[in-house]
Length: 84
Image 1: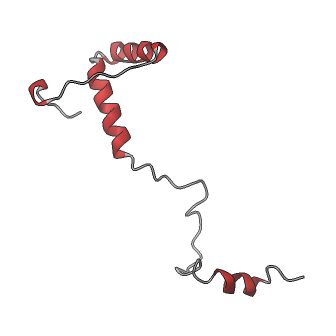
Image 2: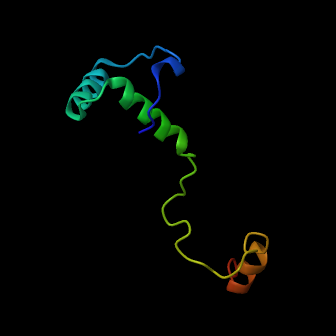
């Protein structure tokens, strides 16, 4: 957790659905921390995630070739794809 004086922070307003507010309050009580601390942690975590998670299976194998996409037609031809 990054400690910072509230004087160095900007005040803002957010709107939460009632059920989300209840869950946030319960979590704050459980952790014995203000809701604002939880919100800052959540925003930091969200922004730190670049959102570019790869789909399942991507990177699961290595063909040993870095140019497969450029050679797609050649690779498919070698495999006999599309032949009757």
